[in-house]
Image (tube, rainbow, N blue to C red; front, side, top):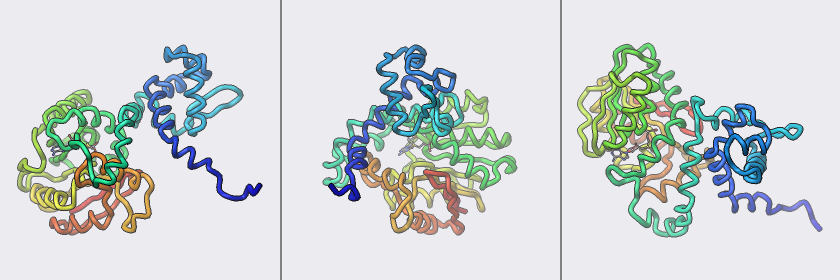
Length: 331
Ligand SMILES: C[S@@+](CC[C@H](N)C(=O)[O-])C[C@H]1O[C@@H](n2cnc3c(N)ncnc32)[C@H](O)[C@@H]1O
C-alpha cells in the first residue's frame, strides 16, 4: 500500500469541526479552564469542582488535549498558556462567554448551503432588526475580544495624553472601547450610539468601572441618527463595517468625517482581508458568518477601506495589526 499520498485525517477533522465548537463551549460552560487554573488537575477533581460526571470530565479533557488547549504531564492536566490567557474567567480577555454563545448558534449553520445559493440570509437577518435580542446576547460575549484592539488604537492615538477629548462610539455594544479608553484618559468623555437595550448594557459596564459620569448614550439607528458636526475628537466604528455594504459604509464614514472636529481621528476595527483575498485565515472564514447574518455584509479588503475613507474625505489612512482584527486609523 502506498503510504506517501494524502490521508483523510485532516478532512475528517474538518467534517467533524463542530466537535471543537461543542467541546470548547461545554468546557467553557462548566468553567473547566478556571478550575484547572485553580489547581484541579485530574478528571475526578474537575468533575467534583464543576459538578459534572467523571465520564463527562474525562471526555472534555480528551477533546481539549486533542485541540491543544490542555497539556498532560504524568497523568495530570493543566491549561496551555493560550487557554490560561483567554479561557479563564475573570482574566482581562475572557473568551468563555463567546465559546458558550457559539455553541448555541451551531444549528443555524446548517442553512449555509441554501444561504450560499440565495446569496444572503434565507430568513430575516436578526442582526439587522431594531432592538433585536440577537445583540443582547452577542455584545457581552464579544466584548473581551475587542480589548486588545482598543489598546492598540489607544496606543496609536496616544489617548492617555490627549487631555479633554470627546469620543463617539457608533454601535458601541458593550461599551468596551469607551470603558477601556476612559480608564486610560481621566479627562476624556464618551457618547455611544446604539439601540436602547444595548446602551443599557453599556451603561452597566461603565458604572461597574466608575466611569458612568463621563458617559452618555444616544438610542437609535446609526444609519439615520444625526451624528453631530465638528463635535468629536475621536470616533470609533468597531465590528460594524462587516455587516454593511460598500455604499452604507461610505455614507457612515462621510457622516463621521463631518461629526469629527478638524484633525479628528476615525478608528475602524474589523476583520480585514488582504487585497488579493489570500488571507489572513480568520477574516476569510468570518465571511460565511456575514453571508448567513447580513444582507450586504462581508469581510472587506484593505483597499476597500482605503477607497471608502478617501471618498468620505479622510486624507491619511493607516492600518495596525490587532490579530485577528485590524485597526484602521483615518484622519
Ligand atoms: C458586532 S457588535 C460590535 C460592538 C462593539 N462595537 C465591539 O466592537 O465590541 C455590533 C453593534 O452594532 C449595533 N448595531 C447594529 N446595527 C445597528 C444600527 N442600525 N443602529 C445602531 N446600532 C446598531 C449592535 O446593537 C451592536 O451593539
